[in-house]
Length: 298
Image (tube, rainbow, N blue to C red; front, side):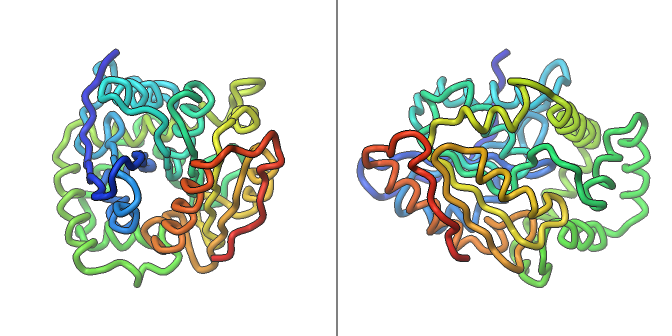
């Protein structure tokens, strides 16, 4: 089912350059990538997408949100707009969607970067609280709770959840995100889409066999970069070694003092690692698991 996605596209001045495509996490939007795009735009065209039901993209017509459906919507957009062999970057839920796309459409993905991907594991307490949004009736209760809070309090709660150090949030970024959150609260489907996104994660967590995200990781052929914050409240850092072992051709960037959104908290080292991945991929790829490289210092 074809769906139009809202996008932010930044064309690089560099001739004959590749395109990097960015997929946000649960409840996110294109602006989450602004700082990283500013650093990568000199070496790649940058295309940030709002996933169906999030940001400025309408929800799926049937309201069905799954990792598979979100990945299909991204693939459809890239196919219709003529993009080939993109450098795919995903954060959190967007990382899980990017992983699915890389296994289903290897022709479309030249490199894969996963920033705090939500791979199946026992979640920390903060993530379990977010998971409560998926319970029946939770969206309406959550809406009432939000209505009882000031906009500043809502943002403070968000930043404490996703940042290791909320003091890193700049005044301009906070103002932009406050405006977007006010706009989202006026949309009748916004809280339902959050709940559906949580349920999509839950369904992905319990899949077994070849449909498991861990099995999918073993099938990825694209050179892969994993980025983990050591102080992530939502994705436990202990999953990093298992993820590193799962991919064939992989690099690992770990960042101390960083939480769930490394591309916002520390965009410079993330941009450097992605740029190196793109450069390496332009050469002849190494065979099999020989492409494994060590931890990139943060």
